[in-house]
Structures are given as structure tokens and as C-alpha cells.
Amino acid sequence: MNAGCHPASRSHRIERLDALAPADARAVRALVADATAHDGHAPLNEHALLHLRHPEAGASKHLLGRDDDTGDELAGYLYLDVSRGGPVQAECVVAPAQRRQGWGRALVSTAVKMVAPRPVQLWSHGADAAADRLAESLGFRRVRELWQMRRDLRAELPTLGDVAGVRVRGFRPGVDEGPWLALNARAFAHHPEQGQMTRSDLDRRMSEPWFDPDGFFVAEREGELIGFHWTKIHGDPGDGSGHGHPVMGEVYVVGVDPAAQGAGLGRLLTLTGLHHLREKGLDCVLLFVEADNSTAIAVYRRLGFSHVATDALYRLDR
Image (cartoon, rainbow, N blue to C red; front, side, top):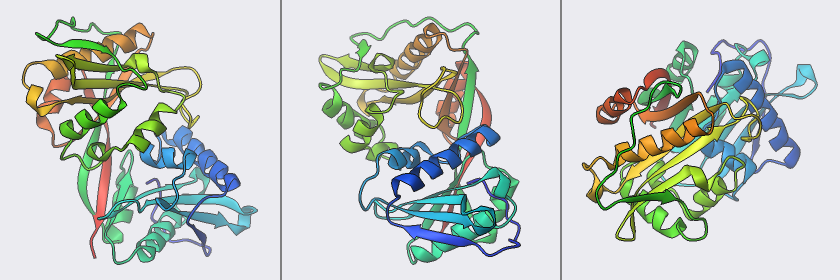
């Protein structure tokens, strides 16, 4: 969520849509790219961006804020994920030139009323004081934080080493999808997003321009997958697609089967991915980790990562 919380000096025209027409989807992607370039980070999470490019009937709703004074320009956008039970997930972005004019408040307030009486959870990426004030003024409370951590890949990396009986290899499209989904579900059984990944979710990511099976590492023991490290290479900031000159790597997700934890496999897989990204010529790598996961944070700090930004999740209960 990127929005000022000042009241508007004009009325707000908000369209409520069950699906986006191609022209509207292009306008939203352009708005997201503009906000990303302005803020230095994407205003919507990957799940929302994927659903913009690969819509799924009945999975989401959309609010478009139109500015009549500037020729029907798209002033803001709010994405609602209604695909699962429990709280509705919301993501909001306001055009940089339209901030501090009440668009964030108008979009979020409309969404809250539209999905009543369901609880609403609202993400703010790169959370700042304005986002805090807006969320709190609408009755939301901060319930979760994600840290972004970064590391300079030009600094020395520890050597890889090995784990007895374990082989690390590349992901094989067309072969490993089923076993990987089962492993991912075990490794993230209690995670609110990663643990619920479906085959459709996986296929969407594998169809993205950034997907590279050579950067998707799996660990197997006696023919069974027991861990993985999926890396990602980001393109030019704001392009919204993964195209362009590679500028940064990501520890996209690391998972280890609970039965295989405690043997150093997570560290081995993390280092495998870091060495791969450095060999690709990248200077920097980022990752996201739950702010209250002190064990993981300690591991990442020992590997040279430091905290650079925070994403916040706000919740409104009825």
C-alpha cells in the first residue's frame, strides 16, 4: 500500500470489477511500474502481479480509481484476493502524482464495505508512517512484518561443503512438480502463503520470463526430495515482467523437509544458490523473512545479510 491519508479535495470515482479488461490490466501494470520506479520497490506482492498477468475466474476483485479532472486517468488500484476462506487479502497502489489526495482511503474504505462482514488483511510494502496512519485510522492493526534483507555478492562467500547422503541438482520441469509440491507443503505446513501453493500457482511462476530451472536447486536423498532453494533474478526495476538487464538476485524460497532439518541442509542449499547468483555476474542478493523468525534471521546474518526494509500486514476484524 502506497498512499497518503489526507482527505480529498475532489470526489472519487471508483469502479468495482470482477475481472479486468485487457486495457484496464495494461493501465494497472503501467501504474505499478510507475509506482515501483518512484518508490524503489513494487507496491503489490508477487501473488497479485501474477494474477494480473494470469487471471483466474472468481479468484479476485478489482477497484479502479479514476480521476475525472485528468482525462479519466487511473489514479489508484486495489486488488482483492477472494479465492480462499478466511480474511480477504488486499493490495493497494496510488499513482505518485495522485498521492495525499485521499485515494488510498477511498479505495480501502470501499473494499472494506464491499467484502463485509469478512475480515480484511492489507499489505504495505516498504511500510512508512503514512501507511501506518491510514491503516490505523480505518481500524486496522499491524499483525505481521516481513523483513527484506540484502547481501553484497562481491564479498567473500563461504565454501559449499556437503551433507552426507544428499545430492543437490537442478529442478527438472515435467518431472519434479508433484514431488516438489508435496515437499513444499511439508516444509511450509504452517506458512499462510507458501504452504498453500497449488499446481496452478507453480505453473504460473514457471511461465514467467524470470524462471530458470538451472537456478532452482533441489536436494534429494535416496531418490526423495528433502529440500530446495529456488533463486530468482530480477530485471530492471519497474518493468513489471522480469525482462531487462539483470540487476539483483533473490533467495526466492528455501525449504527443508522437517524430517531432514538440523543437519546443515538449509545452509548448504542457501549457499548453493548464492554461489549460482554470483556466477551469473550479480552484485547483490535479497531475501524476505518473517521478522519474528529469529533463528532464520541469525542464520542469514551469519551469511552476511542485513535488514534494509520492512513490509507490514494490517488486519481489520469485524
